[in-house]
Amino acid sequence: MIEKRALLLFAAALVLCGCSGTTLEVLERKPSSFLERRGKELYLDARPYRFLSFNAFTLTGCGLEGEVPDDAQLDAFFATLRPRSLVRTFALEAWGVPNVERVVEAARARGHLLTLVLGDDAGSCADGGVKKTEAWYASGFRDGYLPWVQTIVARFADDPVVGMWEPVKGATEVDALTLRTFYDVVGGEIRTLDEHHLIESGTHGPWAYGSEENYALIHASAGLDVATVHDYDTGAVVPPNLEASLRSIAALDKPLVIAELGMLASSTGDPNQRDGAMVCLSFQDRRDALRRQFDAAFATPISGINVWNWMPVRRDGCNLTIDPADPMQALMRGFALP
Image: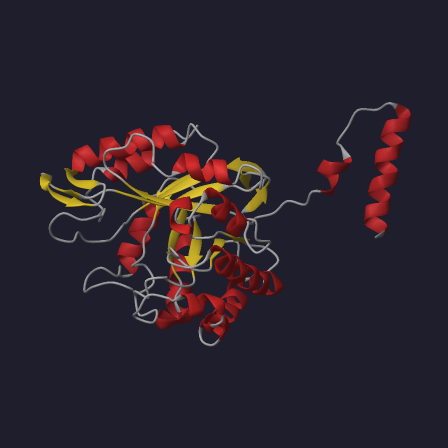
């Protein structure tokens, strides 16, 4: 209280004497090593922050044999990222606190941040094994999931390596009001334990929730700081769900992140292999197609992109994997963020 009164008196003195100098707003803003939100922008180290980084969902334990990186592979992964990257990965109860600690320390050693995802709608990676239901989002989450949230959030509440928490990845087939209430409760619990970290939604675009109005309703939750959208499309120059998502949250004064952006690829490509809006591209064609989407996406006010999905080894055939030898690696490091 005394410190704040002194600042007010100093600011008043500057006005009375006609002196120029540091404003009260700047004087009161304390430096923070945590990722922050100021309106529709993210800030890191007191500067506007935009990121281009990877999803890397095998880091903390979820994956087939060879897909979970050992210590050397983990360090090599973080060593190859662009500076101060924000990597998105799982922090699920099935894999335990020690596995998350291991990844946090590896990220810290190389100066990076993490978005930690606390649940998976599909139930994958031992997170229940089945898709989460409307009943789970309404009340079932309180039994097993919420205690885990309390445990892991309390463990890292004061650690700036954590950039954001994500309550659940990719919720679908759930009523918008039910999902809004879920974020109110879970986000409120996170804020009770952790005054530092941001919370992103992990959602798909408005298509998954019935309308742009429903998407806005969900993201108006006081338990959310950052909206997300997912896009997987090899033919579009602009990620297809981006504009609708930006339009939906325009009045909310919150940032938007493309939390998942991916394309199918193999070494030579195969136009006969398709998955929804994706056709199997060659590695080089995927790199070029994603570069076009980066250009288009970062011409909008979005705060960042996480590309799906880095692994230390490549899965056979046409898939979404990006391994250390993929030409995407050079693009990710060298792309000039506007």
